[in-house]
Image (cartoon, rainbow, N blue to C red):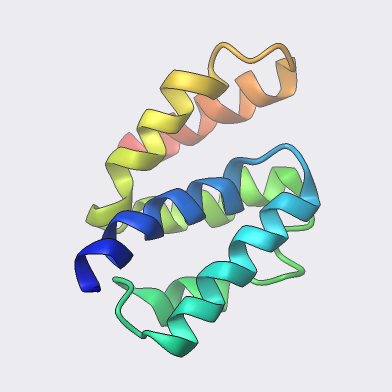
Amino acid sequence: MKGILEQLAPHLLTVACYDREVNCRRAASAAFQENIGRQGDFPHGIDIVSSADYFSLASRTNSYLNIAVSIAKYEEYLCPFVEELLSYKISHWVFFLILVSSYHINETYS
């Protein structure tokens, strides 16, 4: 079960941080939190749950520039986060997402 959870965690967190809709971000965060409570095997789970909570994900700007940057500092989540940004967000039709994605990549690698 641990191997499956390690594969699931990055996907839940990319949705929790990068989805355009607040309800999707909150639902992914709730699913991540539920799995932490039931399984307890997600890498850095408690630290992430304390920062990526219901209220902190309400703002897309905060989600991209603060929450996602803090989660991307963990080695297990860096590659999936950067891959999500480079594959889907840098070329997004919403200009705001392009700006915050480029800022996020800059913050992550500087």
